[in-house]
Image (cartoon, rainbow, N blue to C red; front, side):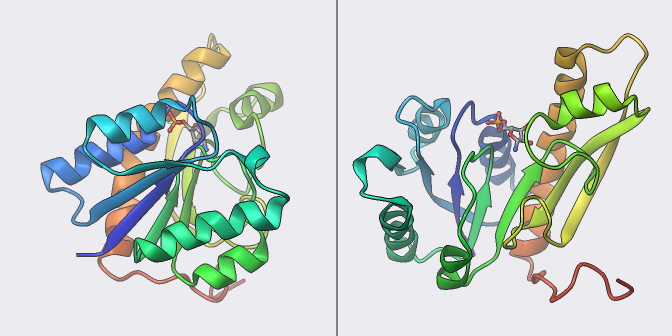
Length: 199
Ligand code: GRF
């Protein structure tokens, strides 16, 4: 079975969905570790409750970004991970880290990329006035929310939506989508060289 590590900075509801998909047998991989850059991240408590080793790497404890990433890299290498999932991890990974790790890294983003990359994707969607939004799971590359797309789920944007109601609807879709996309990678889906053969 492939070995998965999850990096998360906050609430960890996507981590929870992944944990539950593994428990139910819908996702056939082993979660070998969860790491966070924030000691207060709820994701760490969720990992501990599920009996998954949890580690915290507060950036302030390292001299610079390079040293911070090197510590995380060493931890991932010691765990012999095959796949890394970013689940609300609020740091951009450097090209050097991505290359040195050398295994697929996935991310989930709360919009239908390439629409609304970056922060506050749900507010961006409301501000633009789109009628459909959703979420995307993609392979991480050197850019921000720019790597090859694995899967997407659309949700409607309703006339009376608030930031909370839209975010909640997208989050429910995220919890369905992330385990499914991870299963594709667990079954051998690899990051393509380019986003599309037609691109
Ligand atoms: C999600 O909306 C995800 O798309 C984004 O950050 C949020 C993380 O939520 N990247 P959670 O920590 O998984 O609950």
